Image (cartoon, rainbow, N blue to C red; front, side, top):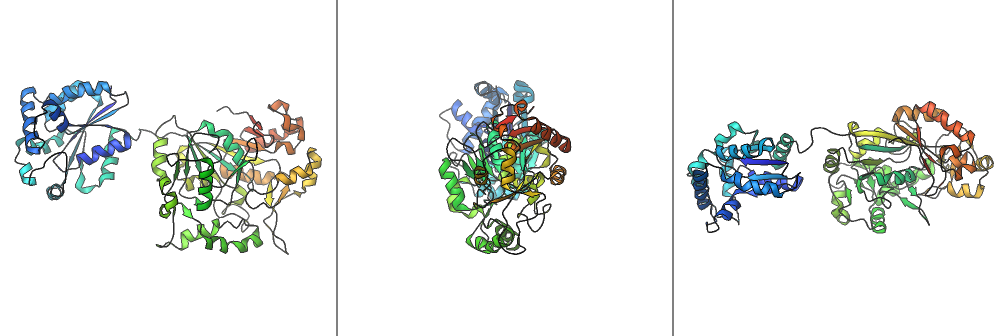
Length: 536
């Protein structure tokens, strides 16, 4: 049985067929054309407007307008339970009344009208191949039934003047009244953000979580490389979401992202991502060679990755002219271009959908909240990530803040007074190796950046930075990574109680400061590295 039956009425050329087509395209509605019902009832009827009008009037007299309800009865039973039947169109009140009596509250009557001058102009431009039209709009109105169609507006559930709206506006108004956009929005978005200076292990955590989600969203730029463990060499994702390989979820690059075309094409090719799976917002900014050249001096000054992300982001603001190239202008990625807001609109209508938004870098590198000027080119907090993706805070369900036991920053450029930024309580890799009883050589290999292959500086856990990040992100959950750096024996732990007692005490203190549970614990870079303590 159909879920809804939508009856369309209105003068010829008022936009009924356009609205019907939009409902089919956007909501998979099943279209029922009354002229096709007429040709089914009388296959010999001529397919011109005058003949069809006459046959319709004859059936109305014989059945008192019930023939449409009779035809819909079988059609409604044939369709699946969530189907939407759209009838284009009804012409007298008795037709509507019989359908309402037969199907009750699932029937909605939408009436369209338009200014007379617009109706005349639209009709003169018609070029239909399925029906032979009359010579003029005045000829259409010679039919008595057609003359009284505007009176149906009085009892309609919604009436729309299409002279004052375009096709998209009409769809929004009609679909909203029909409840097709949903009567409520659901908190279906979980966000993974970094709590320190990046390289916290967000990629591995996001990949671990991703099979539970229907849509994976990534923001930021290719200056951040997210590593994901696999059986041989790890994957490093610069643009695509980190769960792209291990999950069947659809993928989305939000409008605030900045991308390098060769990089994303390479990742698409390596993972064999099909256009129907990946969507790139048309307003994503494209990095050009000049952006990379301009950023070279920042490599020497503040330890920038030099990928051109910052200058591309700045150019988006200061060069708002026809020469600025966005994703919508790039032929190679044209099959993937779709507006983010439309995709998110679809997913947030259902409480059964789950969306994972993967943030970039860390809160300590935020353009606004980090140690300026040693920061990245965007706000890396949860609010910044939501803004770049185009997700309203009302959709947020959980914020997972990923935090290392020993924070890192990229190594400082060589030369006097040059630094990649301050970091409290800095220590050496050798000291970490001695405490954890892990190989210093192995740790040095691990602590090399994913994008530029630079060595990292390392420091004691910064409780003050942690507290600041808590205030900026208000996480519902903490994901604590590199727990093996506290004690190498933690690498063998598969459950919380198997962690060394000192590590357990450290986790307890993290929870007290955060006022949030440490729900996920990473013990090493391995496919069984995650201790999952979630209750969701």
